[in-house]
Length: 196
Image 1 (cartoon, rainbow, N blue to C red):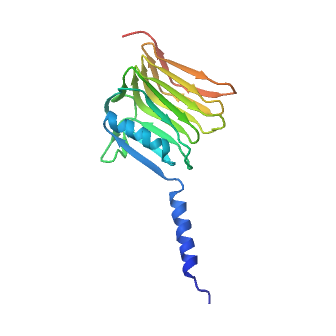
Image 2 (image 1 turned 90 degrees about the vertical axis):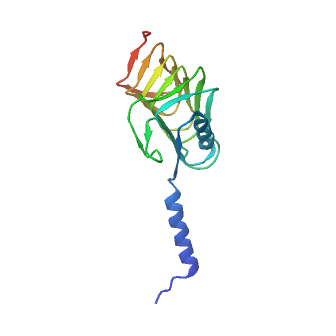
Image 3 (image 1 turned 30 degrees about the horizontal axis):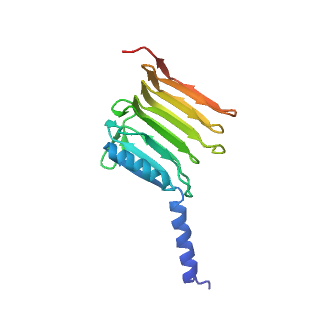
């Protein structure tokens, strides 16, 4: 007859615990500009995949918004998503309408590992710069955004870049900077550079 010892049970429990937290994601539900800045700072070093979900409204920056992924171990994927609904921002409305990050400042995202996804947001006079450090093979995805009087600059030498279903208006532009063979999939985007 085979008996399971305490140490074997403990080992099995720890393996299950590790398996359940290996792909953990930390969610940040944001409804003010101060909460947005705090969530960006926390996500930099949490070591897990992070979802920063912004409730509909306007977030007016009083300075640059900087995300520079820390050196902590973990997946490190980042999703910045507008249109969040529900008690804990668990649901969202697809599309850039309704959630705006505004100001004459910049939003900078430096990603070392993990996918970077920016979706369902309007950037009004906020230049967005995305950098995937060399060797970071995970994709950069930008979808359903509205860029007004701002530029989206992506530097991702080793990553697939997808920009889709987005609108660039009032002098807004999309730039890609790379020193290697970068693959950009830009589909279903509108460039309307007239001023309204």
